[in-house]
Image (tube, rainbow, N blue to C red; front, side, top):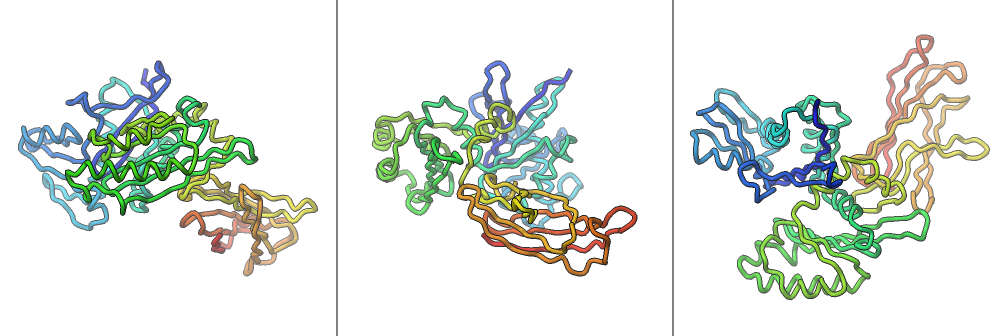
Length: 417
């Protein structure tokens, strides 16, 4: 009998981390390297061994490169859009091919530890939306031989929220601070929770401090880095009552925080961890009780759509029927609605602010369709987004069975809110 796994994956440019849901502990557990139980950071490199004619990934690739004759492949993220082909063992690989192989091997290196393993859900957390990477990862289910619904792609920010709100409630009964100090610099997120107003809302305020703090700026001068971070922490902590602080990113790995620790720890709990995003993605993969919290809150972030898109039925109650609902990342917000036209060639599209219910309306006339009897024109309405504020409603003529075949006409109504 196969063991069922819910997996969270934090996919960064240099390292990948994995976690799986431990049913006994009822929480995510990080996956360590096979050859180094002390680290959970798996390098994003591949190694092809000419001796064994075998591909290695991560820590095993780092080890094999010194013990076997072969070819090292790194810089996979940086070259993802490159058209260069690499000839390895008589076969040509694009960097996109190698990227997909690397991701699959990272997952397989964990699954191979079990006689029979099955992925029930895999949530992949990435730093920022990249259309090429998103498209590749969206096809990963084919490489893995699993259903499309088993894989979901989300962001570091969303994973961080999932992690935070699955901690004890006393850690987030007021605002929460999340500092992410990566290779590109420092980013700060303040998570405010509105519990007493409807709709109940989680609002994330983002401050980019990468110009003020980056690892390249300081070199070995950790004393100045500590002073600068203490100054930023003191400034941000004055803006709201913070229950807890979470620190993540490679910039926090070394023990340089002294003055800044004193600032952050005044009346609040502070946690440092490199596995926040992978564990948050794992909580999302499990769903169920871990997702219920989000059903009660509307989430406002820099990447989320804040409005619903739908149509008015133009009846006496002016009934609103949503096609998409706000509160999720724009690249994960999709919807489809099928309507039958009732003595009209006009559709009223409604954009409704999910929080305030303020709305904007646009009227679309469907020109060019053949004359059909009433209620025999069926249309498909789909919504897609280009960013949190812009997108399009795509209207397709579906015809009406064999009596009134489709014209295959497609109408596109772009919007900006």
